[in-house]
Image (cartoon, rainbow, N blue to C red; front, top):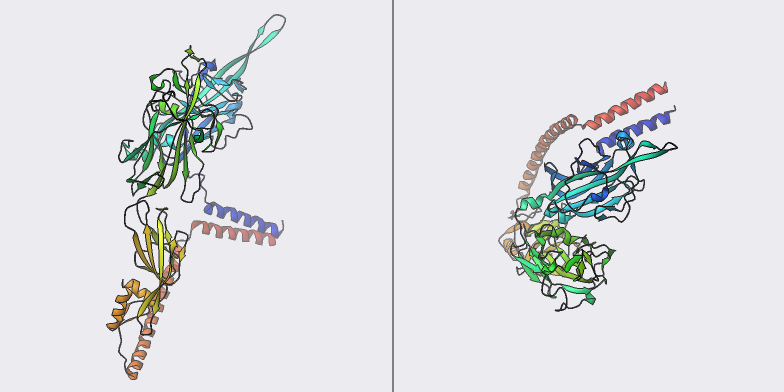
Length: 619
C-alpha cells in the first residue's frame, strides 16, 4: 500500500469521526410511539361493518404482519391517549418481513379482488392487503378518511407516513382507528375421489385494529372555550347554486318558497375570541386581536342530516362529482358536505385551501359545536358546499327519481392585530430600540407582530452652526415598511398607525450617526432648543456625547506639569494593566485547556495513530 492510500484512508476515517459529533439531524426531533393492535379473523369480509364499533372479540394468539407507529411531538397521558404539543401526527406502518414469510401453519397473504368491506366501497380492489384510516369524534360512529390498497406490492411505499392528521380533528380531539386487512390462504388435505384428488384450500380474512385518541394540548389548557363566548359574530347565509356547476356563485338562485331549503337553516358558523370588531369599506368584518386573544371559528349543526327540517324526504346526499370554481378545487368526491378555508397573507399570497370532505357526516355523530381552526393575521374565505336530495318517493330505502340541489354557505373576514406598535431594531445587534434611543449603525422597523400597520418616517438632518449651536432641517418625509433600512445620520421620527383601530398613533424618535451632538441629544434626552440652552449656560460636549462644564485655559507651565504627570500615571497604569492582562491570559489558557471538547481529543488521537501507521509503512 503506498503512502497516498494510507493518507486517503486516514483522512476519510477522521472525517467520519468528526461528523458523528457535529452532524445535526432532525430524524429524532419527533417521538415515535408504537401502538399495540388487536387481531381479528373472519370467514367472510362482507360482515365487517366499518361504520360502527364491532363486537368481534380479538384473538390474542394471532400475530400482526407489522407494527403501527405514531410519529409526532406528543405527551402520552395514558394508554393510547395523546396530547399533541405542536405540529401534526404522522401514521406509519412497518412491515415485518420475517412474519410475512413464516406465518403459522403456512398461511400466506394472497390477492383479494374484493372492492367492498362490509358496506364500505373501495375505488380499487384490496389485492395484497389494505390500510383503512378512520376517525370519530365520539369513538362510536366512524368516518373513513383514507384507503390504501395493495400494501405489499412493490409500488406501495410504506417507508413514508401514509396519513397526517388535520387541524380540525386535533383541536376538537378525535378517536382514530387504523385497520390493516388482508386475505390469508393455505393448502389443506386434498379430497380423494378414487380416480383423482382435488386440491383444497382454506381461506380467511384477518384484520389488525389500532385505536387511540389525540387532542391538541393547547385545547386542553384553554379549558371550556365555547362558541357562545363573547364578543362573537355568526354567519349563516346560504344560496342555491344550481346543480353540478362547481357551486358557482355567479349562477346562484334565490331561495324562494318553492325551494326545499326554504324556511330552515342547516346550521351556522361563529367567530369569537377577538377583542373588537371593525369593518372594511366593502362591509367585510375585521376582527381585532390583542395579546392573549385566540380567534376561533366554530360550526354548529342544527339538523339531522338524514331528515332535514324533520322531513324524511330531505337528506344530505353524497356529492361524488363535486368541485368548486371560486376556490379552484378540482372534481372529486365531496361526500356529505365539504368545508373549504382559504387564507391570504399580508402580501396577497393565496395559500392552498384547507379542505375537509365529509364534514357534515363527521359532525352529525355528536351534534356538538365543532371548532374548526385557530386564526392569525390575514384574510379568510370560508365555504361549506353540500348537496341535498329531495326524494318523496322512497321505497325500501330506494329513492325513486330523486331531485338534487347544491347549496353554498360562504363568507369572508379579516383578522388584524389591534395594537399600534412597531419595533425598531438595531441593524448590527438586532436589539429593540426604545423611544429616543441612539444607534451608530442605523435601524430597521419590525412589523412581525402587526403586518397591517402604516408607517410614516421623517428624517431631520442635524446642523452644527458656527457658534456651536444646533439646528435641524427636514431631509425626507415618506412612508416606510419592514424592508427599509434607516442608516443616514439624523433624527428619525416614526409615526405608526392602525387603520382599523381608534387608538392614537404611536410616535417613536430614533437618533442615528456618530456625531457627538446627536449622541448628546439622545443620551441626555434633550430637544435641540434644550441643547442650545445648555451651551449658553457654559456647558460643552465631550467625544462620548456627555454634557460637561467648560474647562478654563491653564498656563503653559501648568499644562506641561499636568501632561507629564498624566504620562507617568498612564505608564504606571499600563504596567498594571499588562500584568493583569498576562495573568488573565494564563487563566483563560488554563480554562481552555481544562475544557477541551472530547471530540477534539479523539481527533488528535486519530492523527497520532495515522502518523504512526505512516512511519511504520515508511520503514
